[in-house]
Length: 326
Image (cartoon, rainbow, N blue to C red):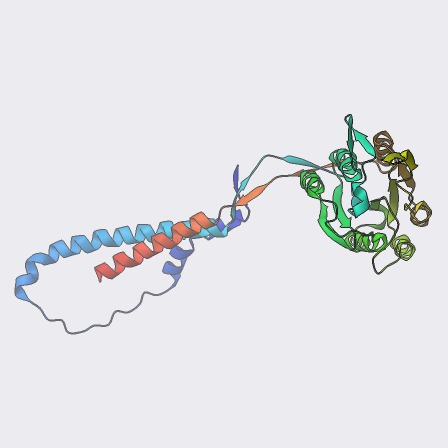
């Protein structure tokens, strides 16, 4: 529906009449006019023409005054009520894009996939269920950078998560820098509602801040960190001597990841396969529930431009008529 935010401005409608009544009319200067006898026949027609133009100009000016007040009264179109669930939680995801994430040791829908594909699938399902939370995302490799600032738009988070590629941020792993960047983006959030979920398959091999130093800063700032170690513990590889048992997560620094979680009041999880990955996010939902509190919001669209444009056009027409009369 339409409504005027400052409707009381319409009380100024009689202002021009009040000004005309209170102010004295201007005194017209008397001068000598040259009378031409043969133009007397046209005087009556000129009076009628001037009178009609004067009435039209007065009407245009009056409507322009109404349009000007209508624009000043802030007309808006108010839409239907929209419920916005919020929880007050700010969740930041930190996803490892180092070269080791291309290791194919996960099975998803019956197909062997790399670690990043499995992370996208399971983390995407987790994000889609977090209605009411503000979610952001940090991607890290040699360095960390912000991919998505905190937002209620889960579809954008999912899209940018799916578009991330291995090696986009470099081949190494800067865990400390990822924590520091996430802390910087969460510093304006209430301390009890700051949560970081850090997912990596390696050890800190790059960056300017050590993971434990970053964890101490996070603990001081009230940032709770949940760490997830990604990758299976054993795998078989074919070689010239047959099959050999390999440990693809030998570089995973579980000790540091556990220490980060303990110092910040979070928890450490190990994702060895897709099922375990899904259980981790189910546990995170239990530990950090999405508490929904419905808030009402009605979208508004400002419409003052249209009556303001009409007032300008009518004023110009009235001025043109006045010039023609003179």
